[in-house]
Image (cartoon, rainbow over all chains, first blue to last red; front, top):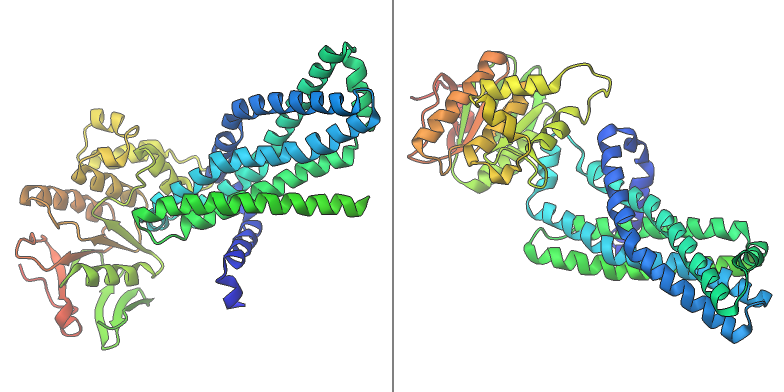
Length: 249
Length: 209
């Protein structure tokens, strides 16, 4: 058991268990404030990037599919829903959050570690793990599904608009056809997938940020490892959900 | 050096190593106490052993504040984290009084909250860290290596600030952990002076001054 805990995966799982078992601490006003800051930093400030990416991705994917399969085909609408809405939107949103927040969280914690601020927090009477890790992990669990929902809305909206303009169809007709074929459970599942990706990114970033050697070199090392492992975790969760959906069908 | 550990029993803090008792302090008699150690490594280990005991607060020479936060945010965190959100106590007013007692002017207090600790002078940073212990005194306040690198005038000014603590909390003791140095300033009314090499024999010896 100890040997497993010493592995990287074991450490991630231990941190996940810690976060799950301590989530009630987030009721404290000061932790709630930190949580809101994290949601703002990881979610709200990512929206301009997400918005532009979603608009371009949606328009490109939908027009390519329409050109390839035909805009009035049910297959096109299904592919837009499964490919863009269920797969690409959570994945690209997670990649943006990994690139922006993962390195930020890991290096911020590593800098605190270098300056021995975990000890300072303890001396202030504040449990460092609760104060530093919980808002960051749960901040991403909340922010990533919200960012994904925005991506989905903008991408699908721009896709409909592109189809309507290129094929000279009424926008309502394109939208209605898509909504008829959309599966609400899969829409919900895509947000659950995003939440899990957010948890994985947060846990990995917090682990690498707080477990370094406390030297200046460890700061860049923590950021690199957090981004690398975060990317792998995002794809693992994505594949797991793809397999799940395949099995359920 | 052997492993150090500290215990609190019957309102008395004891510090041991493998050789036995090295320091004993009553926790209900107040006053200043001093522990002089040979080097930084020993000082660090002593402080770590002491702060593992419940009710022991440590104030390092940096003031023990988080660099990424403003002074006001540091205070909010230290004073409100465990507090009841509906507590009607006016912490802001109490804090202003504490900082005034520490010798800061009203104008300085008004601007201090928005500054980050790293932008304060060392003595001011320590004073700010000290003020929070005035509001929430621990059972034993350990002042860690305060005088290293300080001019005599600054050291005397901080000793005068520390005297406020004994006026406000006469039954709460303060332990100064200092490095052995020929420049070490004298502590007025110091009740015990302990040197690491002869701790077991001199734990309750009166202060040489």
